Length: 305
Image 1 (cartoon, rainbow, N blue to C red):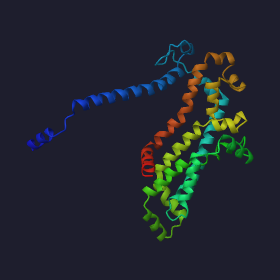
Image 2 (image 1 turned 60 degrees about the vertical axis):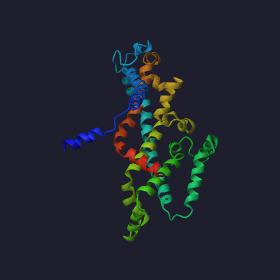
Image 3 (image 1 turned 120 degrees about the vertical axis):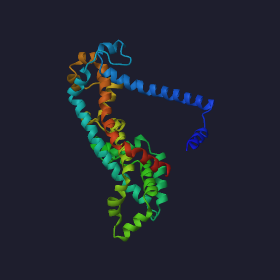
Image 4 (image 1 turned 180 degrees about the vertical axis):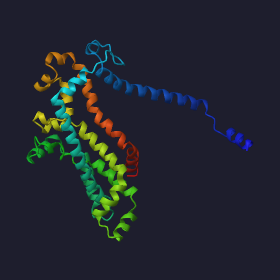
């Protein structure tokens, strides 16, 4: 027994000098990338909790200085920010639900080998994914359909993503045996019952991935709101954040909420960075619940497709 263990140890492949150098280079590069990614995130958090005077003078480099919650207090007191926040929640929940329904309704028939012309349909959808009409035709369609300056203008035009539909179709084809559908038909199960009672419960990984993809897209979207919405009361949070960060534009209500123009100019930086943190929290809170399905759904739906 002892001799066997010694022989196994001696038979182990010892790393060469080249392997050790390669590992050191890899670890060094990974550490540098980690620092490049982590520092901006840590800086944003630090500034949001720091004294505005120290931030303006450039004395906040890594950790918070002059700890204060003044920025967050003003953010949470702003009625316009709260309104835009709930607008984003509404757009995200309803838009994601519609996306999932439409994607499933398109992916399931295209995954059935008996569907006539499914390759042609998939070709047309893929072609439209790469070649679109552009922004002006899309705007004219939205306006002629009566969706301009309405809630549905942010939901219906992007009701389905061809790429996500292809990923889901590939998942259905590669992960759900065809024999399962045949067995369900023998037991008297039609296509609707098979989809709702058998297929979807077995497709939790790819559904979780779709929820994360679509939900993140809706939460971060701002361009469509700028184009299709005129009423500022319907703006999502990202539009308000964009106006503050890039254009440094505040509405009269926000100036009042922040205590006047003089007060806002005093705490402008920490309000901006605090709003970035607030707008990121919902997606960070949702991700852990879908993380266990995320890698499996992406790998199965994309590689095998």
